[in-house]
Image 1 (cartoon, rainbow, N blue to C red):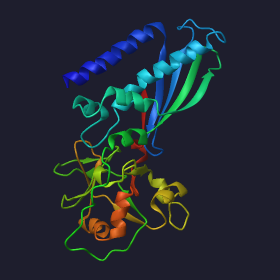
Image 2 (image 1 turned 90 degrees about the horizontal axis):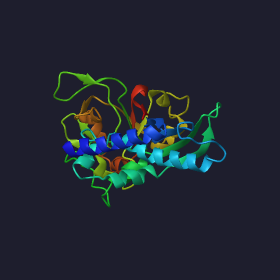
Image 3 (image 1 turned 120 degrees about the vertical axis):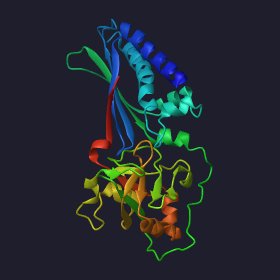
Image 4 (image 1 turned 45 degrees about the horizontal axis):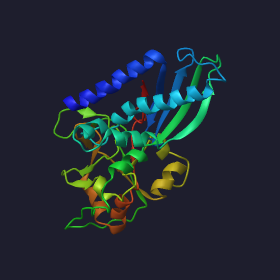
Length: 292
């Protein structure tokens, strides 16, 4: 923890020293539904002593450097699983700041634009969350999905939808929580057998996608939005989560009978390997605003 606090303090001090010369900041949102980290970096041109058009190149350079420095904090706070954020992995020497900086460069940028009063120059950036998850997926092949010695008769599905949009009881606790997103949630059955985790999905494939409840109530044959249907197909297996598990309420518990419907069928097991899993969460937890 001391190591983590030290480098976070270094980032904070460098940000403060930088801001004494030029006022630059970023605002944005972590959007789990679109799987994007969206940011806008803004430079106060007066504080930087710059006038356009002569100072345009210098201003754009300051914005780019400021963005890379400030977006570190956003990536460091990204929740990886129920127990760790990126910052925790760095503290445990399982990740590094150079890897964080490399992720910040995997971005789509909008050309800088002036504010109406000509005082500020801004630029927008979008980092795919898959840039983070792909870096963390170090296995070369998926680990086999668990099976059962007593399989049940099960239909074949085109995807899996787990509905967890309300407060759910926490395993082993007398409290309930609203499930929240992370990069690699685990799925357990009601007997606490592990059904799904990051090791079971193909490399460079998102373990899950997240969506809001409105996207499962469309006026279509499948009842799904076009975006959701593209992920889980026309005949997904719909499951209601029964509880949450973990330090953060990211891991879901499903009924053992529902779990058997998945692991008893080879095609359904392959849905986990292919990452054809969507978790429906409350709209309030699907976006996380930030500013630095």
